[in-house]
Image (tube, rainbow, N blue to C red; front, side, top):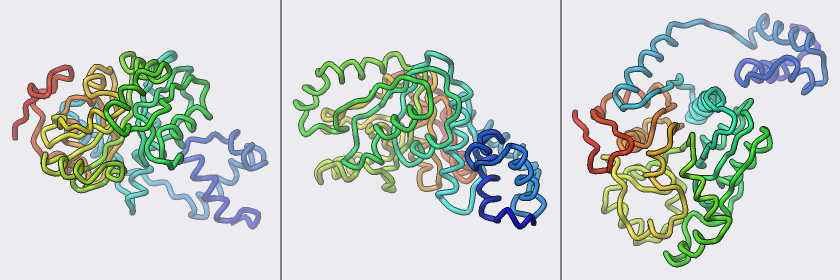
Length: 328
């Protein structure tokens, strides 16, 4: 190995080039060297074993798995990523493929709604080359941690792309139904909520209620938690709670919610869910059953497990909850 290149530097450059689609010119600027030097570093990384390139037919198998799963869930498209050696690695791969898909399908003047969560936050790191469009926050702000809020997701996207943003300066759950009604009538919030009927694309995270994998639990009172458990909640998406059949659970706390409605998501032409892990499989299936999704990015283990759950035999996105049917 050339002594001038440390293994850490080679690995860093290779990661940016092979996994994050950074160009040699971009890397040259970033590392303060010429693009020819970057090319040499990539060559050394391969020759020294820092980078190994393998071609597997597993890609074809995953594509076949994705096609089967799309048919099984009644979706237009599914992307399946290979599982890594940790849940965080899987999350990063799902985020990366979701970002590439979103960049590929977005057209100038589209209106894109984004939710929040760890996978969506990671997605902002990989998003490249969005054309001029509008990005809209799909829910009110969650808690007091700005780094975990949908406002931060919006800010991170806007910092990298020439686009307009529409935020909601209100909490996800107001203190009372009356307070929520007052907030929704405030001009800037009402204008933001009105954009939901003009969405061309929505990008969603999926939370699991049982088992509990969602940050929303900490926002609810004990009696509300008990109500959700008694109603057999399985999934949470944009702070709407679904049972195993994908039906929205009607609870008083819904009146305090400031977010897009499930009916509006059903009317959105493209709705992408970025979600994986075996623990979230029941929640992913429930959200697919609700009729809001057109596309899913998930990991291989979750995809195989989803195929063991009931097939969604009719997927009418604009139908009422009661019209959705399932069969084994």
